[in-house]
Each structure stands twice: as structure tokens, then as C-alpha cells.
Length: 477
Image (cartoon, rainbow, N blue to C red; front, side, top):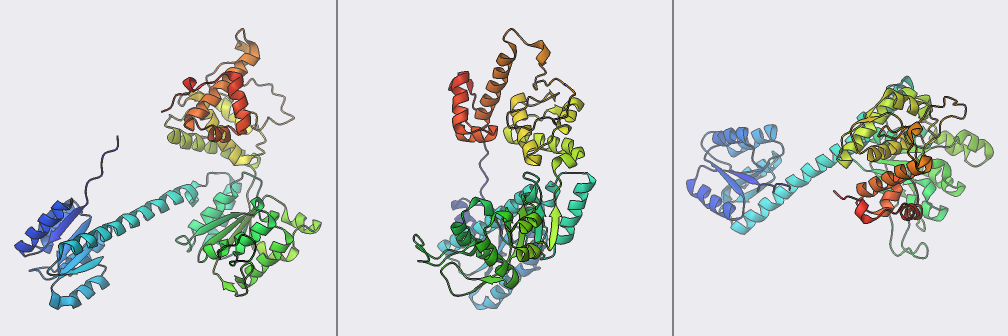
């Protein structure tokens, strides 16, 4: 059970005992924890031992002033909010305090309701800033440069390219097969650039039909077409000041290619149904799994747009060309999903790693990631993985692989040690365990379990019925 969060602590600093007493009574009744100090020196000593969430300080005090206290607090405890109290005739002190970084000020005599409202607002601002900072840390952990896994020379070349281009405003073309991590590279470029504090907006150009894609990118005016009930800002406007990531750029139709080229050349466009040009400052990163040069020769992609996009190309190698990275990636994914599902990460034996290195991986890193999550769920966590029971959508061994190695499930049973039920019974056992594990991981939601398993929901329903799986078989944590 989660421990309740303690009430915010407010440090009151005033040399007037009557003021301290009155504030203590009002703030304590409002549910705050209160620390009383009669000087800036005492307040700084208290903050060094246990920093307060907010300091409420008078300006004029014997010794160091409230402005001195504000300066020290800003230097050593930047998360702590400081509210300055001053007399009616010393508004200039309040102005100076605000310029020095105070959250707000109060004019004495202080009204209780105004005091509580101001403190609530200041503390909400503090909480919001900390939440945004935490979210940025989480985003950086997920998409930052340090999240790119790989030690092979080809990946070091990619890292060097990302490092070189990130701080510039250059247009970047990321090329690579499906599942090689193109979106991850786009995020790394954005979060290492000077635009990291601005939005990163992503669009999958292959997921939208032509009429919707144009409106999605450039927006539309009210009444531009049937159903346009209000003006809509497109992705270019939403990304103003930041980065626009256009995935599957090779899928956009010729009519949209023309408009895109104009934006890249001039930095402005008109919304669908509009006449007024809209100016934006956007850094564009695009990605494709197609050979755009071949598309140009075939007439499916405009040559002028291709040359405009091909300013700084980054080519991501397929996983089969960076086999030495497979153990690093596999262990990384096992650790990630072990933490997510509350299990111990299993260890990969040399035999298991050799098996992974032998596959073609048409789905690349994404396919490896999905296999590692399924393996973790099937194994139950911990122990050793000596070989893999390959699901139906995993990559088969190469066609010329004649090693004949036997595959074993994560618990170590071998195919040459079948029970009386034979191979069909053993396969049913593996399949049943995998489905139950997926249902447990997704809280019994079949649609999510089906996605996790890489099959359709109807296919999952059929398998549940065939194997006789019931709710009693699924243990919810």
C-alpha cells in the first residue's frame, strides 16, 4: 500500500513574534506543516537540515534580509518557492523580490484567504515544474541518445552521425528496413538539439489517405470541406519551434509531395481551404524503409523533393548486419520487460545466443524485442534460457542452415524426451502457457494479449477455445 504523501512544509521567517504566531495558527489549521524562524540565518540553518517546500519571509529583519534569504534559497534549493512579505509602504521591496526570483509577494497586514490562495498557487506551480522535469527525464530515458543499444562499428558510425547533426537545424533522412529503430533515432536527434524543450510531433504518412494526410500536415479552415466544423492546426503548426518527424515519407502521394516541397523551401504554407500563408519554424526529420532513389527512377517520388530531403542521410543497418549487437539487445529487452512485468530477468546461455545470431530477423530489432518479451512471459522469469520455442511470427533460421540443432523450451525440456502425447501435445502445452502468460500480463484483456502475442483477437479467441483455457487458469496479480 502506498504511503500517503506528507503535507507541504512551509518555513515562516519573520522577526515579529506576533506575525509568526498568527501565521502558524492559520497555516496549521489549513493542513500545512510549519517551521518558524526569527531570522534569515536561522532559516538557512533549518533549510540545510530539511528543505521546506515554500519559504514565507519578511523583507526587513535584523541581520540578513529576506532578499538575502531569497538569493540563498534560489542558489541552493531551486525547487523551493519563496513568497516575500512586506509593509504597505515598501512595495519597491516586493518589486525587487519578484525581479530576484520570488514566486509572489504579500502586503501586510495579511488576509487569511488571500494568503492561503497564494500559497496554494505557488505550491501547484512547484509541483507542475517538478512533474514536467520528471516527464522529460522519462522521455529522455526512453528516447535519449543513451537508449541506443549497440557496440558494433556500424552502429558507432550511426551514433557519430546523430551527434554531428543533432545540434544543427539540418533536414535528416533516416533510411532502414522496418524495425531497425528509425523513430528512436529521430527522437535522439530531437532531444539532443536546441529544440529539445519544444514539441516533437510525429506523423505516420503511410497510415492516412491522401485527403486526410494533407489536412493532417497543413491543417484546414472551417468549412474547407464537408465535416470541417472548425479551423484545425496541422502538424506543421503544432511542431512550430520544435521538430516534425515524418515517418514512411515514401508513402505520400504526388500532390502532397508538391506541397511538402514548398514548405521545406519557403517555411510557409496555407491551410486546406485557406488563403493566408502560415509561417513556421520547424526542423524536419523524415524516415523511410523504401529506396527513394529507386522510387525516383520509377516515377513514384519527385526527384526535386528527394534531393531536398537527402541533405543529411543516416542509414540504419539491419540486425543481420550487426549480429554482435544481438546479445546486448536481447539482455536489454529481457531486463526492461522483467522490470515491467515484475519478474527476474532470465540469463541467456551461449547456445541461446548462438540461436539468435543465426536468424535472418526480417523484423529486425522490433522483432527481437517482441520475442524477448514473449520469452520472458513463457519462462516465468529467472533461470536460464538455453534455446527458444519460436512463435509463428518469429524469423525462421536461414534457408541454408543445416545444423539440425534441436530447439528446447525455456524450461529445458528437449524434443527427444517427448512424453506419450508426442510432439502435438508438447506444442499445445507451450501454446497454452504462452497464451495464459500473455493474458496475465495484460490483465485478462484479450485485445491487448493478442497484440502482445502478434496474432489477431479472433485467432486468440479460437486458440483459447481449442485449448480450453478459462478464467480460472489466469492468475491476476
